Image (cartoon, rainbow, N blue to C red; front, side, top):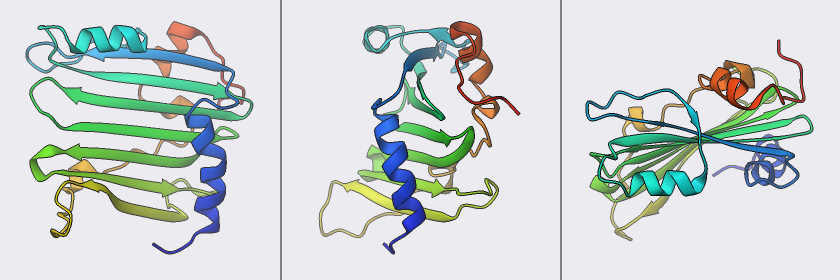
Length: 184
């Protein structure tokens, strides 16, 4: 993969922030699917509650959200699980100074024994990434041709600001306005 100074610089800021380093606030929300696959509303949660819900007999799928905030940094990660499929998708966003800097999707598809990561990096224009990376993370059959992920498994959502995230209103309602940068 070609070197990108933009990607390396953003990763140096966003990777530790996504892991919680230097972040002041952390919040968890979850929404659960019913037996028809329809999702309910976002509710405050925790990793312990999430784990307990997944092991229950009434588990039909969920979205588990982790939000971390620091000075001029905001990260959000949503893990999507279906109760009927072994596929998992994780979307993550990192905002620096209130603007999107990095968007990532990890897609795990056990049917083809693969895991892929699609990452886009932005320096000024969130409509066009400054750098993009699509990579196979883990393939269970070494030496075999790496199957390409389907387009719907690697599509990225690119909100310009944290307030543009589809769950931001639920986050703000549950935990109050903590964002360190002003909303547009």
